[in-house]
Length: 419
Image (tube, rainbow, N blue to C red; front, side, top):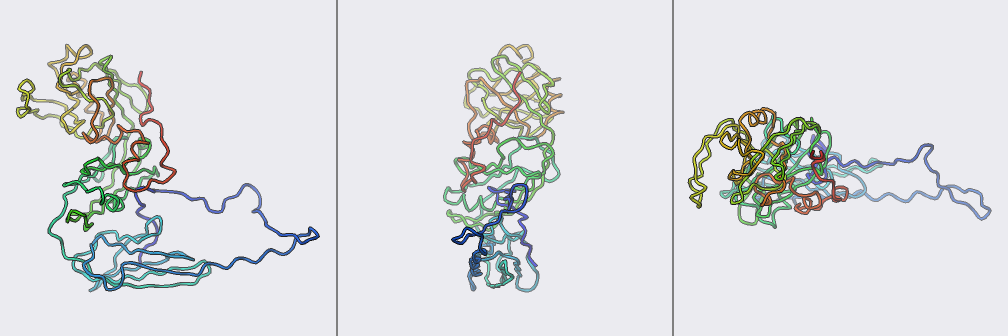
């Protein structure tokens, strides 16, 4: 028997709690009418209940349906109490209702070129039931699919600024983003509702809450893309699932005016270190970034840079990527004499080897770093830039309406004041 609890909440309305029938202290209010003498009379008749009515989709006999098909439900005078979906040849499909009751979503994509039968039962408050059934067949596996990726992995611990990041290749056309976003599910425990934001070219979408995640939050994600039809003739390629954990709050703040980095752990300043940022011809980006990748040792090779002055091959220790464009925090023993005094890098945050190793041992992917006061502003999409926007700006990037309780501007994401 199919589950009807909201296991997977829609990404733009997670964990919404609706108080039912709450009153102040004391007894429930009584409503009485009075006759002409002013004496209470008997209560008026209870209005008749709305007749139970149920409609479901897809229609019976549908063929070549995508494997992302959901069992749509429209109910008046009651609610869905049971959904059963079976595949021809045996086997029930598990799933759950959307939070708004609009559809029952299979837990996994349906199989290609298979026949399915769905049975849906709705029940009225008075116990009346109505059941509808439908049968349909799914399409064959398509030849043209998008590529996709999810930057969240099982059993990994991330920083408090870790957005849920989904990548698409090619980008999702604007007209398709609402349908795709509706199939991207995020659940946070404890609940911290959020929404998605699309980068302008549709190659990335970020999910975040108004504030940084609370430490010890559990993120459960399903990006249910397989079989979604797109207007460019392609289909979603695969479903992806992951469960990650948010660790302690660790933040880095860099001020170009002082050439210093202030490091905070759980709101407390624990270390200050000198830095050298990008020189004027190759400035560092100002904005809020997150650690995207960590490498204890790597090689920077910029021999393809169009400017000969910026071409080099250098062994690097304790590198932490901040942007797709190649900005890192890393050890730079050659610039120690400049750190805290002047900017000499090609855009990276240079620190001493000892400080780089100390940071590397403390940070997590998803930890935030804010740089301020440089000659260049961080470009949207150059890295995981979800936190470089105010909440008011961020929600404008959703392809679906954002619930009113999430639409109001929030405080700046980083609340620890710089010293």
